[in-house]
Image (cartoon, rainbow, N blue to C red; front, side, top):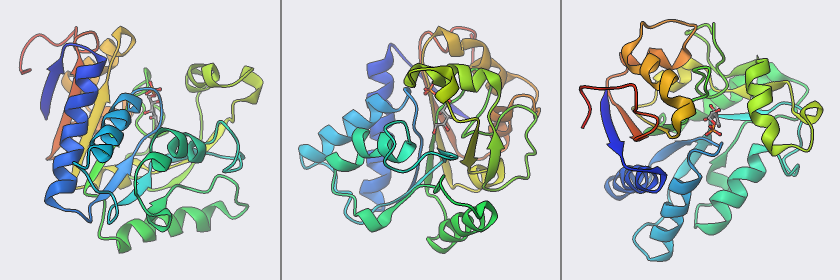
Length: 246
Ligand code: F6R
């Protein structure tokens, strides 16, 4: 694991955007795995700036998002489709047909999950997967005690996650209780992984992910077994790590 500790959220975002920018520069038809949540918003802003300054071109890039709530339409303000539109896609020149996000509004979930996996495979596989981390150690919506062998599937969100995500909804009752998420197997098959974390609330789980045992109770700990992981942290989330960091 390559661990980069930055001073603050802005520096974390800039460093992470540079990793994505070099990926796209070296391979203009890169397959990007993308995440939602508060953590990558600053990185997306930096990527938008780079695009506006003509430093980056997304015209041949393909994207696959990690997850989508189950039961929300794509147009719903809180859907991850909408999040991605607002925070990245409408601001850059990625082609609509090259954007992939699980459809959370299907009846045949199994077929949707199989198709998603097939599309990732047929695209050649994810070159770099962006991840945040939940305070409970989840990556994507792979909640504690996940089966490490799972591919894209329907998950039940834990109460922790529902509470954490209720900040985006007008009441906790409105937060969906299920989501379609890439599985740990899907994530581990990405060629590279870029995980971002910031804020003191993440310090314990960041420590567990990097220094703890590899356990299904901390899904992100499996990343210790991936051979190309870059973790970009701010000072607060790195507070429990004392050595082996740059
Ligand atoms: C988002 C996702 C989640 C978040 C995690 C952290 O697509 O899959 O795993 O990355 O919940 O969320 P934030 O960044 O809001 O703290």
